[in-house]
Length: 249
Image 1 (cartoon, rainbow, N blue to C red):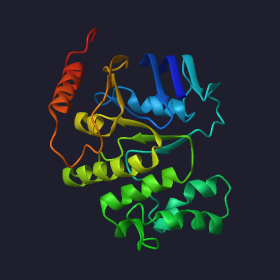
Image 2: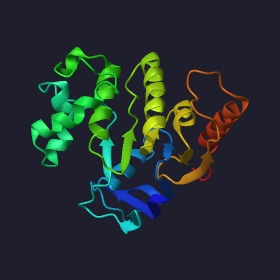
Image 3: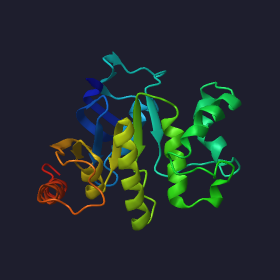
Image 4: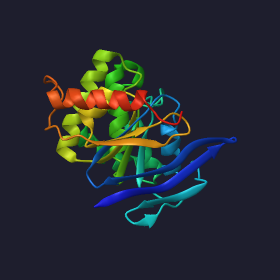
């Protein structure tokens, strides 16, 4: 069942066309990635979904209904963890629930059982500066997930991490996603990350962004922590080719 549908969406900012006739869809429980070069407008698409921007034309529908400025469909995780340094980890994690109006004690009771699942048990009362980069990203993802929104928006969540930590976080996210099947839309410019995590991949052109290709990832899960199959290697090559041979630029 389609939970998110964007049809012929275009966006102009400051006189510059950013998105050009974007149409995509995400099914419930699906992991979809948007892959494209830096500055191609991928993050601007997320700002449309969260209501920070309004498209020039086109439609965005969630569960068949038009997206409104008061939509609560999306939980958003930015590129950096954005944890507040003066709040303990547990109070950072419940921030979204508090914004929704939930009592602090009730919010803490909801999230505490999840700390072990997210590899954060024992760190509830630590401050962000006391945690590693990977642990802070796990806390940021937990803060996103506990909001219990239909769709998770992940904007290059591991881009600021070193290569080893990033690989570990990708494997950890794959395991969590397999257990929960969150409906997820990931923005990335990392081809291997997209292939490792996604059910489908949309490829954006350079700005103004158009969808120049769509790929289905048929590889069995789990994918990380094992050698790349011939099909995965071939898909990565096709994705690189799509990024490097954009027509009309």
